[in-house]
Image 1 (cartoon, rainbow, N blue to C red):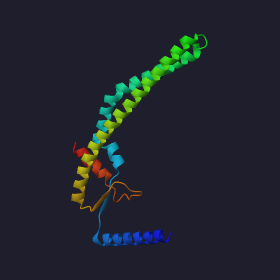
Image 2: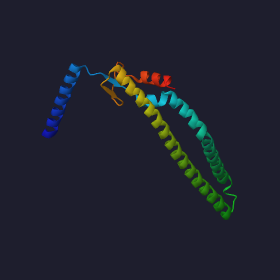
Image 3: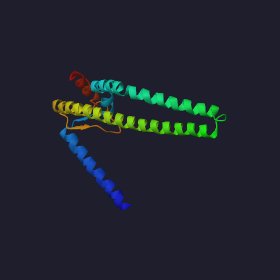
Image 4: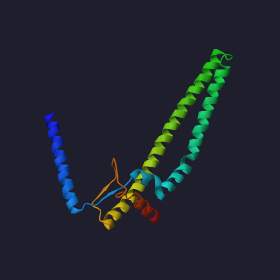
Length: 169
């Protein structure tokens, strides 16, 4: 308990000392909302359209398979009483196989989609980081943060990054 209190006191003192020296030196800080950049950058918008075209047909096929599966389940529920035991089991087996096929295709789709999204995001972040470095140099910023609990609009340079990314098309 005392060790934790001493550690907290020491960290607070170091932070206060750092803050005081930073203020004396005129530390300039910028903040980037990375999520917003990845969502609103022109490259992100075009990547979204490209991926929609690339994965749209597969998504439609998955929806068609899911609808077919539901139709088969409903048909079995309706006619299950009139079918023989052998026919009912055969229909249940078809439904089970179709369920497994659908689950496998959904999993493959999600994996492929996640991989492509990660690739596109990586490209966008790489471009954004180059722009951020240019801004840091031209604006003489000492520190740029990408994660923060609270941010003043005075240090948020996200709009500037998005504008420069739009100009770099």
